Image (cartoon, rainbow, N blue to C red):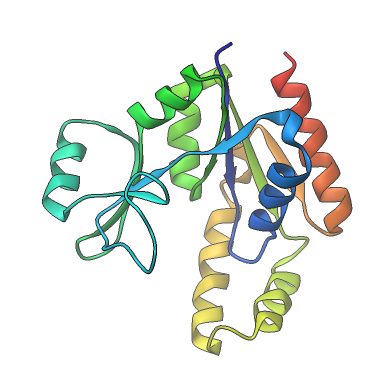
Length: 190
């Protein structure tokens, strides 16, 4: 049976990764599998081509953009690209996997437009900008100016929430996980 696409987007610090990891580890019945992204950066540590990422040169990445092989992509830094290959997602869907995509808001909207009803787009929203700032400060991993940049980006990203099929407000992690689970289970059972 053909799989379906589940798109997650959220501002940094909203709890998206925590929710996705919980769904994938605790709910095997959903048959969720991450899409393997493509990048022009070099492998780190023990990363292997075709496992964590498909590693290509910046030139190869640009050629694939020109050939319209991506559902979405972004040049994060000069010559540092990340993207989702159509062929990879199609291969996973054909195997019956329900493909999870963790992408930025623009990428999420592009993928939803491409797949239409075969995709569910889920936006994980913090309860407020102030709470998001507290979470980012609480991580203790970013300098104050980095946190302020993330807050500005979050305010922009929040404007995309109405374009998603479902908005899950993560004011209580257990409730947010349950809402995401119920929404995804309903979508997969259609």
